Length: 78
Image 1 (cartoon, rainbow, N blue to C red):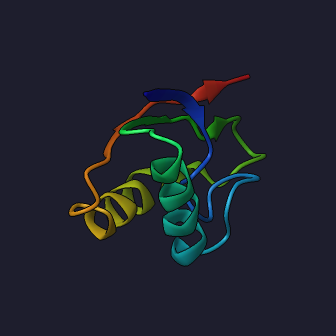
Image 2 (cartoon, rainbow, N blue to C red):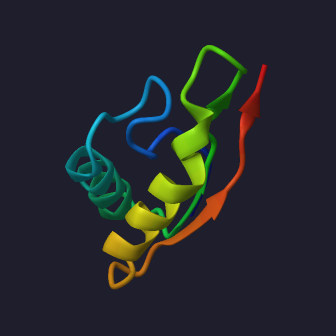
């Protein structure tokens, strides 16, 4: 199963605030059969912290590398 709209990158929008919360959310997705997630943080200048998206995305991706879940980066653009 593929989740095509998910806010699991910590510290960048109204999603999780910590990497621990990101990992917890991904583990929950795994429990229901999700094996691919397209993460879609909000993108709106001067509203969300878009500067940290790439860095935090790769931190999460590295943390879950052995979970059997693939992460892909997208955006939810306003």
